[in-house]
Length: 289
Image (cartoon, rainbow, N blue to C red; front, side, top):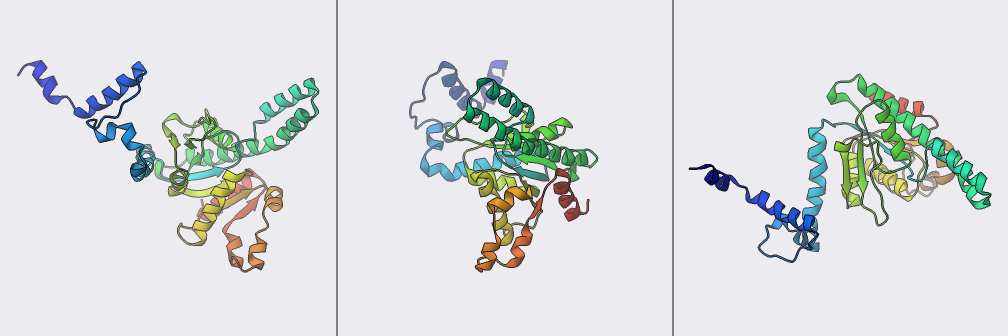
C-alpha cells in the first residue's frame, strides 16, 4: 500500500465535515439546506427548535469537560453589577464631565465615582481568595468565577489576575454586545446562550457565593441560590451580600417572615458584610480554613 492509499484509508469523515463548513465560512458563502450533511456538522439542523435538548446537553458538557481538564474543582462565585467602573475610569469620566459643563453628565460621573468603590472592593476580595489558593494543593484551591462581563465581574477576575491566578468567566450571549472582560483566563472563558445552563455552572463547583450590589441579573442569581439552598436542592454554602447599606435599602426580607412566607431561620441563609476581609472571613469560618 503506497502513501496515498494510507492517506485515503485513514482520512476521517468527521474532519471532512468540518472542513466543508470552514470552506464555506472562508469564502463567505451561506450554507444551503443539505439532508446529506452529517447531523452534528449541520448548523441548520442543530438550531431547530426540536434539537434544543441537544443544545442544552452541549452547553452543560463543554464547560464541564474543560473545567475538569483545567483542574477547576472549587470556585467562589462573585455576582455584581456590570455598570460599575474602575476608579481610574470614573475619575476620567468626572474630569471630562467637569470640562464639558453638562449638569446631567456631571451628576452621572459623580455617581460613577461613588460606586466605583464596588469595583475596588470586588477586586480586593478576589485577591484575598487568590492569595489563599496560591498556597493550596490543586484539589483545595478556590478559583474566582464570574459572569465574565464588565463591572464587578471584571473587578473580581482582575483581582485573581493581579496574583497570576486563573479565573473563570461564564459569559452570556445578549442582544446588545457583551464580550468577556480581559482578565478572565482565556482557556476558562465560556459563552452561553441559555441562562439556565449558565446558572447551573455557577453552582456546580461553588463553595461560596458573594453578591455585590447589582441589578436585575444579580438579584435573579441571588434568589435562585437562596431558593435552591432553602429547598435543599443545593448543599449549604456561604452566601454573602456585600454592603449593608445597599442591601438594607433594597431588601426587607423580614416582611416575608412576618407574612409567614418563609421561616425565620431562612434569614440565616445569608450574611451581610461591609468589607472584603469580612466576606473572606465568612468563607474561612464556614470551612475552617
